[in-house]
Image 1 (cartoon, rainbow, N blue to C red):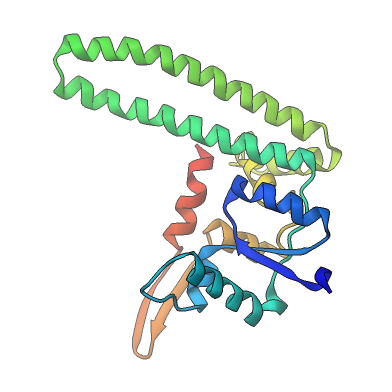
Image 2 (image 1 turned 120 degrees about the vertical axis):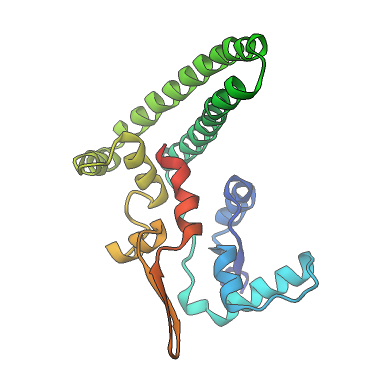
Length: 221
């Protein structure tokens, strides 16, 4: 009977990996749930703790069992690709923060201080550029090591406006385009599909969801 159990918990990135490997070893069914999906249909109480959260997650999984997407182990190449892209995103964010401060430092700090900070940060930026470049080289190496990844990567970069970085992110986020059943689901996940909010005579604006856009935007720098 134990193998009929379903383990459902919120997706927390790499922090899921240890328990996922254990459950995979014993062939348990696992459903990784996104917090936004749970909150949209299950009302959380004002009180919040691990026990209450666990009860709500269990309620969601029970009520919507027929709609759960069960976890399938990722290939070694896909796991490495996702880790590399996450690290690249973090480094790009640090670099953009350094660059964005330059203008303010030049405007509001004495010239001797701003010049010192500029020279000091140039060294850091150079190291960040090197680290980002190393990761990008590694990303291409991982993609080219697998024929299916390579094939879809080349198709993706053939689309005008899609470069190597964006193509790699698309492959990682979609599990090499196997995660979604159709283009509409992919567009919705990416935050480029507009939705209208209306009620009775009220007609809201048709717009994309900002949370979805912001969650992916950082990868496209």
